[in-house]
Length: 384
Image (cartoon, rainbow, N blue to C red; front, top):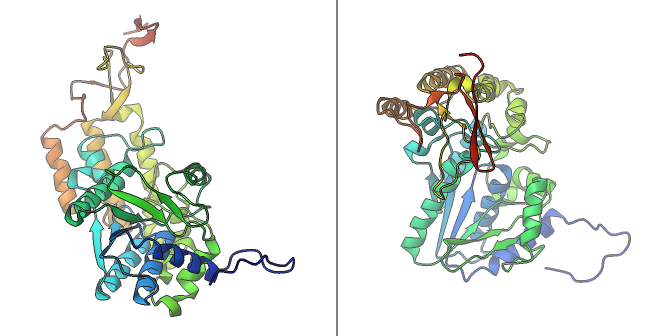
């Protein structure tokens, strides 16, 4: 029950877990007009808390079950092993309770190492961030499209987005919370055009970090789901998690703290992934455009001698290193089928669009070209 009276000077001003749960459940009750729900589940603490809250509220009769509810686990195949293990166990429990679950994986050629080492696309970086869309967003959108076609109605997509995860995300939320029917304090609702696949709602937006931890670990007698293994990754720290060896972060802090535990020390070789990505980004492993590229609008590309894909030698070297890392870490980074597909792409001489084996190796000295006032200026090599 909500109370509108003003708290006295001596009363606790900060929201309690009970209040946060009540607010989230009350808001979810108001979404009955969406007949089909999908929950985006990554295996992290916030999305796990979201999944548990919704399924617990439905099981206990606190919210009306939608006509369909599907928990979509985004399996990038690059998640930290304990998080993936707990996620798969939770999905099994939910299926036993009658909930619909689905593991969403990228298509074979879109998987991280197949795309990188088979097709030759360089490792992702902050200014070339292809990985998130490729291995998570694209397959999830395809699954949502399939769910919508089967249901005939726009979906309600529920996520575990929460304020306080990062300053960048908080700024994004603050810009959108006053538009598209967003309402501060009641979760984050994004309503786009009628043609959109889904409207997105974040019921835990207002939860504090301690609420998430308390809900997961200390309220298991209430919700009944065993997910304490997530503590191996997060502990008492605010650790951002993502793909193992993520090349977009300065440090793999989640993995670093995880391998301090005896149970997970065998994962230590995974720390070698980030140095491998940095190595493969060097010119010695790349192709380069020797001649100016023309855009579709008839103008030259700004970076007219840009570096491009991995050479075939780089791909062979990269695969050998990844297979060695996974052998020592006792984990599957590249499955047998993925390894076979990578080598098949090599045999087909596969290159990214607008690139080929004929492009020069980036390590070779060539005449330097620059773009000045729309014209190409050549600076010839002094020594050939």
